Image (cartoon, rainbow, N blue to C red; front, side, top):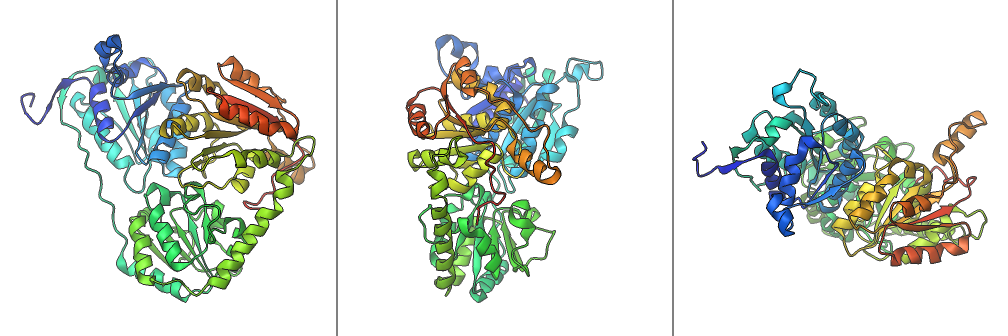
Length: 555
């Protein structure tokens, strides 16, 4: 087999893995140093000769301060670029530290390949350092979780992992490689760049959905993150422009319609769902964010269109469903309908409600209250955001305001932890955003509670020269829990934090920042942050008694 011309010359597993990753479009490996995975680093930088000559290797190596940050960064890379993100962590606690981030990618449907180091096969069962069987821990939250026991199988395993992670329904794949296997040279099969052809939705399903839309008097279209992940944003826009169906966007589909589009009615979602006689949900599950698919009373009929059959909701009756390539689904519906639906009065009424809700926000966005109303931060930030800004939310109460006020102008430019709700995503997501969009503004919105999970990784942003504007809404507590607990019990516990000077922390790590206590100082502080060439944290002290109204839109 070593003489087979179809085989690559003998190389250690790191070379095999990196070659496969690069073949599938990976440009960065996110990691935290560990001896179990040294061959990956050797291959990523191009070996000793490249290091000595100052040449760059095939992958940029970004090392962080906590393994979950590496995986969050890889997950966000998959979200932003639609190419599976790539991360590697060392054995034992390196893998277990990454589990929460992998679980978030699983729930979010984010394409991700994670390589884990592993105690040597030759010493397995002898009590080697960090010896633990990882795949059973990762199996419930990955598309595949396996160990490679053949030195010639590392490259093919990583090749398969990228292909699986990037195919519908997307998600994380875990590849476990024992240390002795990763270090051992072997001849191996070359990587394949062939992807998995998307399945097409059934024509009869599309025709049935078109018929329901044609008969509806008050339809609503909900667009979710998989519309972006599937590359279907242009087709979605075509469908909307052809039919005139009003749209509610969530997740990374925010921006498919720009904020001024007459059919964007996200801020009127309460009225839309209450009055709809048909709700078409595309590219997102019927989970708690959408009332589990119960729209109105009595509930409106629901159509669910997803990228693969396993994503079709099974917990409630559906009027119709379709599974497959979302671009094909939208274009197929547009062909069947061809002309605008006679729903102008319905769509116009919802848009007027949405504009009224936006206008109602104006006093809070301009509030001169002291202590600072959290909304004032967004009143200052939004006019300063460029069309291609990437906005990242990591937090509870403070970031809920962002979901209400910030409306991206482009799809794929909004990032949040998603339905799993895992805090600590922010610095990793910011790394990925800065690398994916090097010339864009990158703004990380942090609650002061979320800041405690991963602020140390500002050190990684500084070391790798990845400037980011970080805005902390600092109410010195866990407001998302504090106010509901007071409502339920009349008191609260375990919900208070200190009014910490997080900007001091960032300065100590090599960045810059300032604390703001007066509303009129927010704008100038943001200007200084955007003009800075380092990670810059604006620590805004806000009124702890102002809680976000527990509605996604406030209408």
